[in-house]
Image (tube, rainbow, N blue to C red; front, side):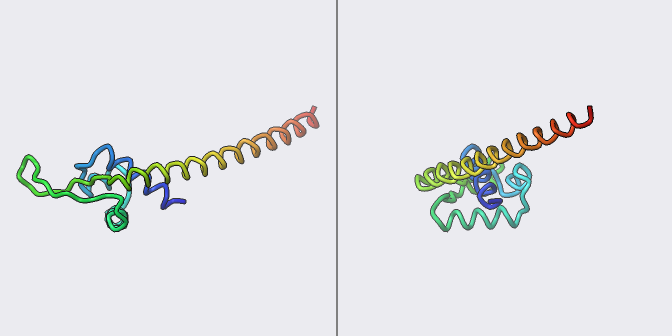
Length: 112
């Protein structure tokens, strides 16, 4: 599940900020440089993102990270999966909270 969440965060950030460097991604996402590099290589290998070289304002070469049409579909798919997982966790937590409240009510009634 952690990998899914990390992938979504990276895809979201790349979608909004395609000019980000790997070091900026590390800082913004709080991932290690190795993790960012691994995810980018994996996503590039699957055709989810593509790299495009460019020169920035200081004439320094860099890359744009661009979501491919396949990447947009994949981002939607993994976001839906992640949302469903979180909704299940939320339902489970609500149930646990309800049980704990009932237990607490029984304890408090017994103290009176």
